Length: 87
Image (cartoon, rainbow, N blue to C red; front, side, top):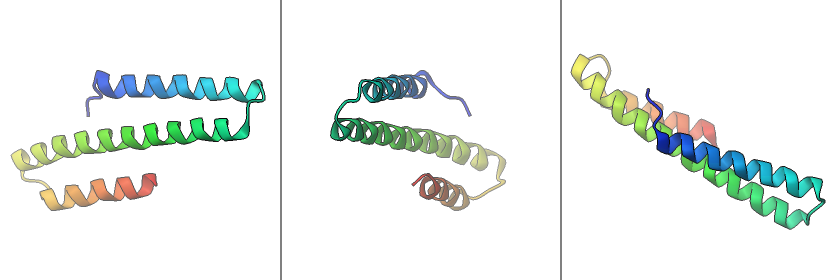
């Protein structure tokens, strides 16, 4: 699987969010503000997982169709399982 610049940039933004959260903790910021930022980082990670899984699914289905190895249904089920595991 190829990870495009969009995916990498999402992770770089998340990395920046996490650094900001650590800084907030070091500065003893209000718990509600820290939790709000943690929630935002988690949401960003969840969305990135969705992008990676959906991109992988499209690529896998395309390859499977060409090679006739696995059915699209099996690949979709694998993708759903990955998403369920991530939660």
